[in-house]
Length: 472
Image (cartoon, rainbow, N blue to C red; front, side, top):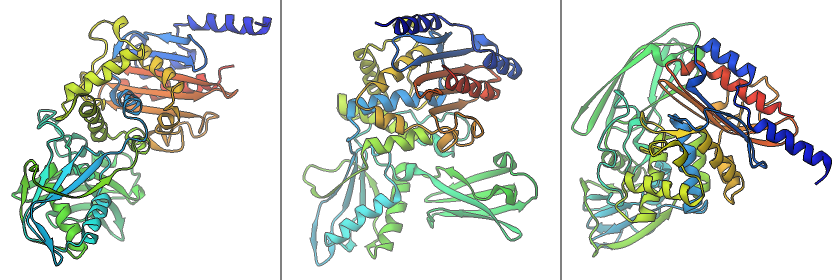
């Protein structure tokens, strides 16, 4: 080893014991009213065996949506980036002269990315297989996942919001009805992105000039469901400066929403159907018609991390559960799969006590999930040195350019030089990922804030990003 290399190693060793936060970070936290004991930080170069900065790094903290990094990293390792979900079509009758005399059956395997366009593609294949009219019912088999995997509990009182939708082995569009808001002439327009006749909109929105600001705080919605119908009433004001905005609501259960989508798509494809919806297991005597594969996991994780999709993360955890321990998938099996994966890769929560790592659903949409900044940081270092590194890093938002960090540090030299996942719920704000320093060396960075003023800690997080970027 040369004298210069030895000197550089000694410098790193000295830096590795740093526990005090950088002055810019400490100042920003003080201005935000966040005590340093409520903050955990971990910074380590990916090519170094030791951390540069550790502050409360072994403290168990709520990571909010940053927990998705654990779920997606585990899935990429356990399932491989090439993993694809399947969706199958069966029937229990016969097909002749473009008529399926019998029931059409769908079996889902938990595809978190199955959208209306994927359903259209599946049904187009059915048309090409010689079916135009279906005389029976639509049967949906969701048994690959256990019933009520989350006990039907919502994260908060916003039970209609799409982020509160429960996982399902067959979910179309994440059960989400997307409402588009825009200002047209002297009125506010509210429309469904993919229009279903079962949804009625009552638009009482009024146009108001001024800055867009917290546009959601200026409007209210009310949902009334009647049998197979939903009436959504919108009240409030909307500014033209908001441009187009979207609100996603989950108005029906998973099977209902899939059934409504089926009827609309099948009609658009020229098909005929007048049957009902049934939820049951497909019999072993059924005839398999088609099988359709999803996009590979390496692509799907981008939607999960860049846009922090909670339902997709939960479905991913259940997929690991089913693949490792067999169907029906349960949250408990998924949690066990992740914890075993961590232990197998020498990433143990043992140094922070038996309750240091808590995984409730793998999405971070939880009041009880916990992890330490140190464990998360070490996992990120290991991920960088693993075969799945390209897919994992590519799934994270690029600082200033896309995803949940698109608007941050746009005038900074760190613009575009970091891949960072954010997390935020009341009392929690977190950021973690990879930052390139000024010399092109990559560092892992984790910052977890648990405090009533956590939402005001964004400047402190940005200050840490810039501090890492400016490391020599």
